[in-house]
Amino acid sequence: MMGSDFIKKVNFKKVAQIILKKEKNLIKTLPRSYAKEDLSSDGYTDLGPHSLTSRYKAYNIFKWKEKEFQKIKKEILNFHEIFLNKLGIIFNKPLFLNGWANVMRTGQRIKPHLHAVHPQTYLSGHLVVQCNDTSTFYMNPVNQLNDPLVHESKNQVGMITLFPSCIPHYTNIHKGPDERITIAFDISLKENKNDPI
Image 1 (tube, rainbow, N blue to C red):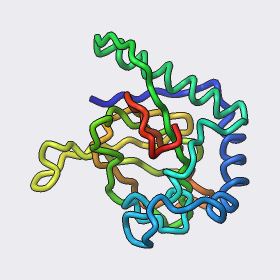
Image 2 (image 1 turned 120 degrees about the vertical axis):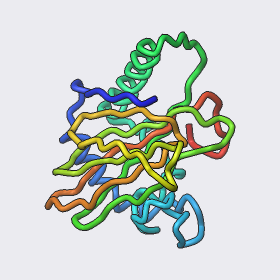
Image 3 (image 1 turned 120 degrees about the horizontal axis):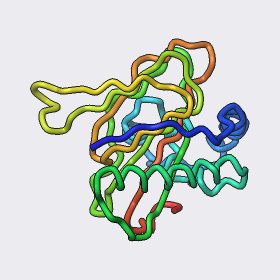
Image 4 (image 1 turned 135 degrees about the horizontal axis):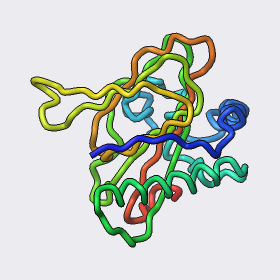
């Protein structure tokens, strides 16, 4: 159960500029999501303990004051409703949205990882802010060890994808001259007291 579409009402160039402007200060001032400088400190993405990704639990991008991030939040929730309607699901529970930015530079890639398997796990998502010839790969969890079935999603600016939080996913190597920037997020049915939701 995955769904993709495009968000068109957001100035993604402006979003990219804001993220890049804040990146160094956030890395400098926010604690890593896990204290150890090992694979878990960056959520097993291999972007490293000094990446913005390694601070994913320390902030919620949807609490940023700039209006573009409030537009993105609204568009994610709208797409969530459309997604459920297409599946014939009636949903009227409160949702908690938590998000963070991933910034990749030339030669970097995100290794296979998943977002969550805890009791309040629901859906996760991926929104492309800036890219150049990259893809995100989603692994079918049914047989991911012996005969993996992988869905390739070619990244395009404004593309939003919703997927179950337990689905492993990764990227290919970023070869472009500009940063590849995405917003990753989790939609939860219950507020997690450890996360800034």
